Image (cartoon, rainbow, N blue to C red; front, side, top):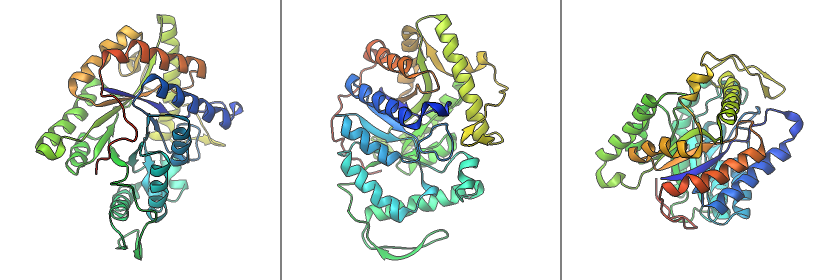
Length: 350
């Protein structure tokens, strides 16, 4: 089982400065590379201070220039916000400039506040995403592509430069177990998360992937499942409680923009009350001592999860975050063997 650090660019204090936020993320990526993490992951979100990264491909190129081996994964690029004729070319350039270390996770968009202010109604995101994905795959896979659909109509054109090999791996971000199964059968690598859900939700997601991959026979052997979790290491109960309180506060902002009213003041998401208690949240997050972390991750390995994406960025502070990344590499990762990384990665056609 492999491990990734999510560079989620949480920004609860505007006075801290966006330049410092991104410098912190870069420093985390450089450290993760040096310590042998498999990947770092980048979100795409606009107009808000939670998961704040409006330019993930640019960020990926910067990280690649400062690291040696670590893969750079988007979690995720929101396809309905882009024109695929432009994005396809930008993607090929980013893939080239990251030396083939780019893993493209894609999704339909999750924040109504963000999507609707950028001209994409939430009730259209599924249809727009499906067509955008089809257009993107066509542009990457063929020359002189024309299109006559609901959202794209264009005469024959060829994206330049052309992809190197098969281009970056495509990964589908999906939470619903039925959706996970459907995307797996289509040949996509999967990114998923139960968010603050319980173990039953997690197991249903994992089972959906494995059943679908098994149904595919040898054609599904190369497909992988990445699972994202909020995580942090604490040395004692006092520290653990402080991290849990920070995570609860983070989810108070996340809930507002994800399922709540979308109350945003000058780009800053308001924290709203949560029905889930800290104790209930504790059961679904990975915030514990290193030895407890090993015990809690062991079932993930037994379930056949290929990669755990660790979200350690939730207003805890850069020094503590860097310390938990180092501690995880030293005291947790050695318990979970994983293939040695290579750069560039082997390209697999999704």
